[in-house]
Length: 217
Image (cartoon, rainbow, N blue to C red; front, side):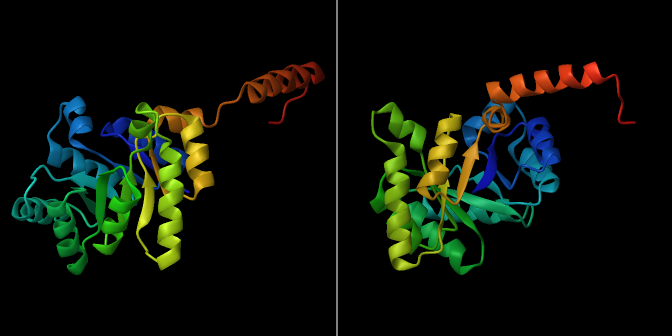
């Protein structure tokens, strides 16, 4: 499963990229607002930093506006992916971009039927929001599993991008459910390496090594 960083904080993206753990980045208007920086400057900086896809979301809600904004964003860098809302206008824009060879990420997906429509429109990625479904006591991972079955049934190439991922358990469950990608906050990605038994084991190894009085270099 690919890991995308769900952030607009360039320092966090650089750190994860240096670890070799990053396959791409997703941003959204809320993340950009939190950064306090110019939207297009942030997208350009992130796109230059990572080799993988960088999702940049349109602000318009009408077809013509989405197309104009999306084409403008696509010119920032070759790895920019246009993020579109899962509305009829967004699906129409998705079809437009797909026919033009521009990659898309259709976002705010909450049902398998919505995911089916996005795949038919030619979306590169579909973003089901598992955490927000969990907030409503709906199993977000069941949606991932349903989409996986539907896409496999018909050979759709749209990649399932598990979004609104909040915990290490979400990451594990998304991988088990067959998500192609998970977009994850940087703190959660780094936390995946942590385990209390790993820490205890290292402490024991360090004590035992010190007792030998040896050095490697």
